[in-house]
Amino acid sequence: MSAEHGGQSDGGNLASLVRRAAAAAADKPALMSNAATLTWQELDEQVDRLATALQARGLAVGSRVAVLLPNSVEFAVAYFGTLRAGLVAQPLNTAYTAAELAFQLADADAALVIADPGLAPLVEDLPVLVTGSDAWRDALAEPASPVDAPSGGEDLAVLLYTSGTSGRPKGAMLSHRALLTNLDQLARIEPAVVARDDIVLLVLPLFHVYGLNAGLGMTAYAAATGLLADRFDPVETLGLVRDHRVSNIIGAPPMYVAWSMLPELADSLAGLRLAVSGAAPLPASVLSDVLDSTGHHVFEGYGLTETAPVLTTTLCSAAAKPGSIGRPIPGVQLRLIDDTGDETDEDDPGEITVRGGNLFSGYWPDGAGGPDADGWFRTGDVAYADADGDLFLVDRIRELILVSGFNVYPREVEDVIAEHPDVAEVAVLGVPHPYTGETVRALVVARDGTSPTAESLIEHAATRLARFKCPTSVEFVDELPHSVTGKVSKGKLRER
Image 1 (cartoon, rainbow, N blue to C red):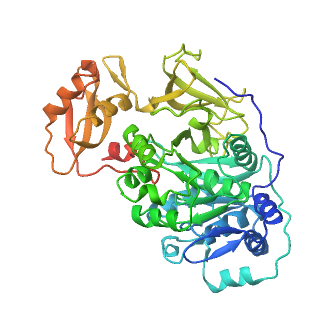
Image 2 (tube, rainbow, N blue to C red):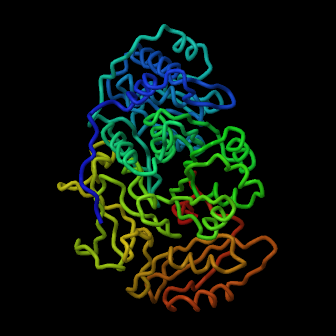
């Protein structure tokens, strides 16, 4: 189940990708948005200017600079400029409250925040460089001189806080080496994940590792063109795809679910070369709908913040099977292990454990929780491999429900309940039970115009699942909380 261990990058700084793209395609559009378009040469010059301005502030190499910006040209300038100055970028979720931001900024001991004018008031007790302000314009108006980045390789590049399922978020420390290695690994896949001639839709939030490295990073790596959208609106974004002849979509399941319902999907994707999806499972029916209407597969993948992020993709499989996350990308070793640490037999589920140059350096600030002495990292995700070696996710270990000592994987129960025609969405949790230790509770969003009962859903589950796996209670809710990439936020459900 492994490709060779290796693929470590040359020890450079991630911002060198912009300079390399400028040398290869100076006058080609790098990033396009409603507000601005920059060529690779212009982007490289602005990155130099901002890096110079940040260094002039006297920030020590390795200081954390938070980036609180929507998807925009300014985000790219702030991100790459921070890295080129030898500083650490800390992208922040633009939907966070002031309290959530305050925790992460204090935990990271951030020295500066680069913020959008509408978000800057959320930041307290820290210097803020506001995009569009006089200070921002002055920084980008200085004559550009090439800046030699004073950091790279194993040095910390990006600090990204992971939401987890409970407790305070933790900062995953991603080095220049980890981020560059994952791009090197993706570049070895055929067909190319991102090619130089591609116009890439960048609508996934750039503060999330998937949009940040697999999207923006890979666009710079290939010297392609990125089309920025600051939010996902199904009709508007599909119009952008059509009008700009987008050839590459770095997507997540909610995008394809919404698009599959639009009659103009096929015409809008006429220029498409490749569509990928990650961050959450893509319903098999949506996969089929997109293929039937456009002739294009949506290739699914799997990864983590801690792995910069991509670990597997169906692009590496002989065929893209519905429900599969594919096989390891080049340079990633992957094992499925049981509770004793031994590798599992074929078709038996086990915890996904990985090794490769794309792994993080542990959690902030001391590197705790990182890869072990042999370089292996336990993901906390459970999967099985079929006879062809293709992987299928089962669930997360920490979401495992123990009913009278028997394992119940919420994903398995969710998949069965989701097949009921009256169910729009479902999440399954374990709740305490006086006799069995835990029992299964389902939270269900009913389809519009339907009125399913708890009894009907429990009976439906019983036709497919052992009785101990079936919900003993069903709660109907108007909606489920989601992360920015479409995952149900079970931590928030537990808090509730």
